[in-house]
Length: 122
Image (cartoon, rainbow, N blue to C red; front, side, top):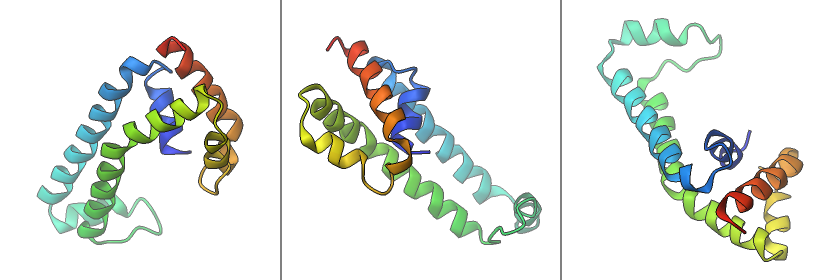
């Protein structure tokens, strides 16, 4: 599912909860990074062995969490831009959500932004 949609849903479609939701997600990923860094290689291999196709490199998992944190740190601006375009019915909103990474979620994203705009008072 789209990270944007997940963040909006986790904030219960409430614009004022977005910042806290994003901060909590970042906190979770930083905690996971710390846990991976401190566990032994043996414990790490046991952890990922549950996933048949897991990559047994701690650095790989740490880098994935760091990339997610980076995306989360910038997601509020993306949501704000999309929300502004949605409210003024700008073509950029429809164009953006129909791109490849949102393609399967167009209806859900439109619904989420309708609820988010209402919570913002628009």
